[in-house]
Length: 408
Image (cartoon, rainbow, N blue to C red):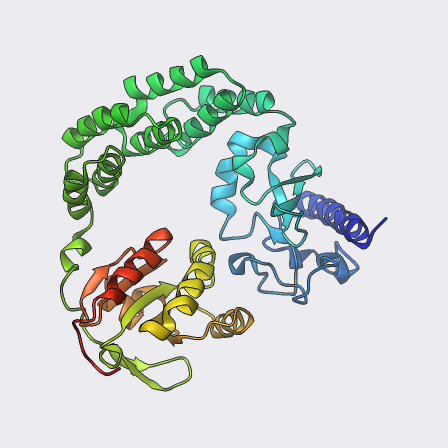
């Protein structure tokens, strides 16, 4: 047995011990513990059981939102206070097969995987997003289909579970039952879709099947019912892009997001101090193409995007491209730790205030992260959605424009 297998064997024993301790705790208290650290020392005598053998961060979850505030714990507990409401809802659908405790520290070659302990104290491996590979929980696509069909039969008109429809269509498609997949689309088109959540579910299904003409018909009808609803207008913009109608796509983009009106206009300046206490302003970056990156360590999508931002920065920094990170994190040590570990070379701004009180988040009306504002050499906004593949393309185009002759 190699070291990798030995480590997994130890981790499995830890997870099973944690599961048994949770059961005793629940029997005694009539509820699950708030955090896994509540199990020590009464229910878990050995504190090392809370640590994965390959955890190099001395008992830290790989997701900051899952970090146990009371003690060093490697494992992701799925029923802590931030998750409890959502996970209780999910359990109505997925039952005792869904994860209770997860370990993200073991990576399979070529594919990131999680080791899971279910509510039923079963150990199984799954993808990071276990809902996307339900066959891992139930053993087959067919068994997963039965679970979802049963849930939708019990909660047919409950908008909380409309997100199950796209999952069900994907599963039917995987097993080759196109008839059943089409029947679900028609079920939504003729019934539950009048609710905004129903439209979201139908959109996800139609995207999966690339039925863009059907999508246009459905969402033009939705627009009549919800004329100013941002989710409907944004999806119409997406549909028109897919159908090749750039003009109408832009119309609906602008209707769905007032920030589009800022494109081409000067971005208001700021003057503050960076994370190291040095003065920083937007004005001092004039003459450069600059990305204002609103982000946080606890934001999974921000962390997924960061390698892309770093790659583009390293490629074009000598041509006049720069980045200013604006962190809305709530814990400075975690922010500094992430910056150091990932070698982020650009300057960071951090106020230490809650999102709703952060000066720059308020100034730029940031309501969610990641949000990335790309600004040209003259200080005008190019895009407030400069991420993914669009980031490099927009940076290259902006750098070609040498018309602004400022000294940085």
